[in-house]
Length: 275
Length: 124
Image (cartoon, rainbow over all chains, first blue to last red; front, side, top):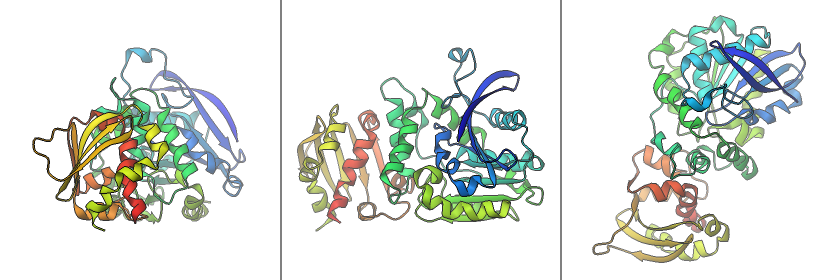
């Protein structure tokens, strides 16, 4: 596993993105998108999986404002807010900068939602799309204003809110590593990501336009995920002819991070189909 | 043992969890937890239970209330809860629980309260 930085322009604004990769440079490119308020460490187990990296070039980048991808210059004069447009631009800019040939993209949570957007608007740029914990729309279950205010510790409240999305069977060490990443998020970043999730990224009706003959689409959701429920994902898949559905037992909202060994059972067959 | 009886074991359950008390060491709050129809009044000081009163309390004043149905607590307190019953917000999302009042002390110590209200699981 190697970590590097790449300079990209996203919508004309210079960015310096941190990413990690593992696998042969001529392997099938698999770009991994982390969840809101976290970073690409969520995919470290996938990156370290020799069976996967034997055939895949796995790449996981930190979105701007997350992890080691610092915000663009002048960030202090703005309030971070992720949009469909900015998120799509970041992904496409990364893929272009890395000169990836029709990569597969696998995203979780907001990453899963943007994968659905990619399927709608940019399907022919990708060879496969994998949406983890994704649906066209999800009912909110808390007020995001609590995520960023001076009288509540942002890191601890972010982690405490999402802790319930982890399945009870997930190993304690993996659970707490997942929570630690949330505790380390920048002020207001998780909240800003959720603007895309809650407001800008509503895909009801739009998913009907997905053509899985242009690019195969896989949706996998953990049964303990109550943010994106199995029912949410089933409802979404029912509207997309040819989309592949898998509900994952004993997994929650962060399958690749909270229980990588269990997640492996579900993702390997999908990757085998892609390869 | 009824659900309320299980919750009434909270003083001993919390006293045995030194790490949970440590994580709540900044917490000073009075709150109300409803186990179905039965209210409990908790006085928390430094993460420990200074007082637990069971049953209706004339003019009982608390910062916030968390209430859930009997079914919600029964499911939540299984050794390994089923999906959708395993977290306080899973309960509120499905309409089996609600919270009201000044939620700041709850959100400021959210993981503490999640773990506190899950302690009766040990009686499963």
